[in-house]
Length: 174
Image (cartoon, rainbow, N blue to C red):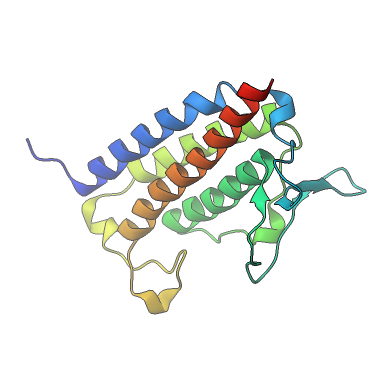
């Protein structure tokens, strides 16, 4: 049996998503904004009711521990951007992407983004994977759409693990 690179990336994406949903399905509403430590990044509501992430252009040392809300915003930002890039559309700026405002909306956003990503992957063939892609490293890196797709899978697994560890910690402390 021969598996194309696109099929392999799609399989890996589905596997990663299945592992992520184990935690998404078990999150409690209060888990999202719970601050795991005094030094943390979260999302904050502005006077217009929109939720924006804490951010620094240069990563601080030590790196703040993110809340689940911040992590879901982060996934939403890079996944929205990666999907736009793979589809050949203009990716939104980070400052254009707000957090949805509560846990249920964030989970719904994750599910929608996953469907959009799956559709974008489904539209690629192996030749499309070889096209140049500047996202997320810049054009000087000389990488391809295939690299971007592999990065999306790795980034989702990393963020899913971070959310999973916070969720487990909160679950055992209830």
